[in-house]
Length: 142
Image (cartoon, rainbow, N blue to C red; front, side):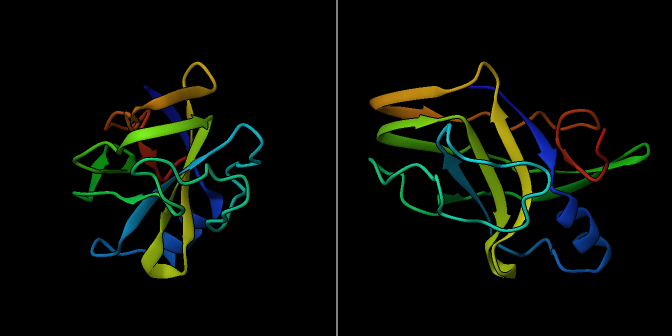
């Protein structure tokens, strides 16, 4: 499923402070429609996170292949693989990318295009926002 995202305000400030680093472990966790996530989110929380199911466990999974890119006047992040959970019965509306190495600090809130997505004992695939200055996890909010 496709997704769109908002970079968390705290992440932008923390980048200027040198908090987040390329070698850190960045995670992605799934959230139910009850979750209250926004660019004001500052840290990972298990409140309203999807329950364990199949290969999905609390805290989500690590993202692989961190890349930072500058495109014109916008810096953005990308990862080389999209998250996937198998054998999962989940209902999710959003996900949170966070930095597990740095106290679970929030990076971006991603909502699924089309709203709530349900998987019943199947594969729950997520397509992260496309690399580039307009859709990716970027250091510039509209």
